[in-house]
Image (cartoon, rainbow, N blue to C red; front, side, top):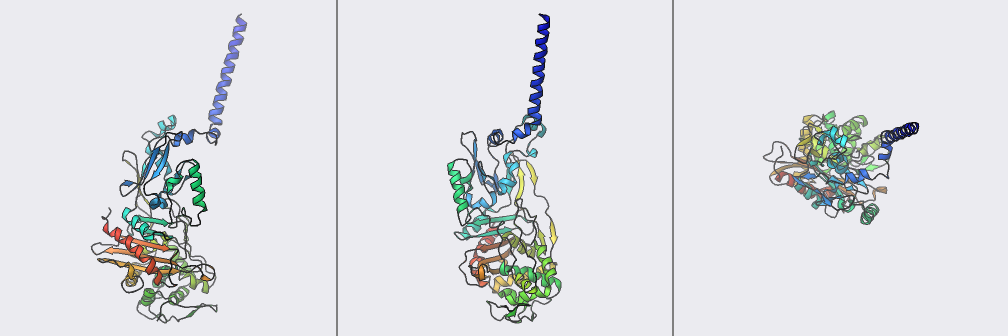
Length: 489
């Protein structure tokens, strides 16, 4: 019997070795492909087995998690969902994540190695820690003022703290409630279809993902280029501009909504937004210098993230001087996001410096320990400090005596620039109303807020005064909210 036992033992050992080899082959070599297979539900189940971390505004979470008791246990909830949707985005068990829910997903879901005290042990055990929290830079009062100011109108608001680049408000309307997309049932699919089929595009973040012709608000950039180049040295000297202005190499004549623009000074032209003066200035400055000025402010930057991506604003490449003239008054191919125009206003208040805007102040563990902080932000000088000082003077005049009077705030110094952007075939579309501005309380050392507002469906006449009548009151409400808030560190 001994040979039979020996043969049986050898066969059993062979089977054991084959089993071990097969197990190693499956786990080591085939493991990644099995792990990534759509049929593998374990990662999805693990993702939702614990509550997600919170997104925090003004010390209070604007998100939450609901225990459903189902296999995918926790669903995302939102506080004032439509108000913060352009910032939070959605976290859906069916459709994934967007905006902060996406860019900060590793922290919120608890998979960021920095959240773990012993990351190697977590990797070995494949355990998932508690989700961390994302603390935003938003000012809750400013966010609410912007949202209420836009109301039922289609548009967007972006507000920045000029001295730091902190984003204080980011609003887009019409909006939606991200909670409608949190789960994975039939109601979520129906909500997804409805939101995507809505012609008003409520899920479009107009503040950072939609570009518009900036109209006369772009004249801030053109004025900066003219002053920096030395083309204009005296704000009160005649500019030699005709009215109307025949576009170079064209039979088209450019006219003004305002009167008395012929040979107007830069101060008068800025205050009353004379198209002819700024079109001629742009041509006289030249395409290379105009492009350099625009790109200094952030136009044509394809890498801006806050931390989610921002659609690039464009100055374009004018092929001739007629196109350059139109680009210099914010028309033709010039397009900008509201965030970009808030950056332009912020640079004017910060002695000509542009600071990279950011939305996340810090990320923290569930217990409160800091994981990461914003730190210093890149800064670039886009115009001389003396040029920025002159532009502040011009923008102040717009609010004190010109088209932006509706933005004036008692007890504060306010500067602004109105704009009406024409669009559509033959400029047949209802003009977009723009207003960019900044505000400084009398007891502040520096301006505390820079704002850009665009209203798409503004029933206004085709003139820069419409930006003052439609968009300026919204900017005023946002600036007042910031000035009433405690000064941040």
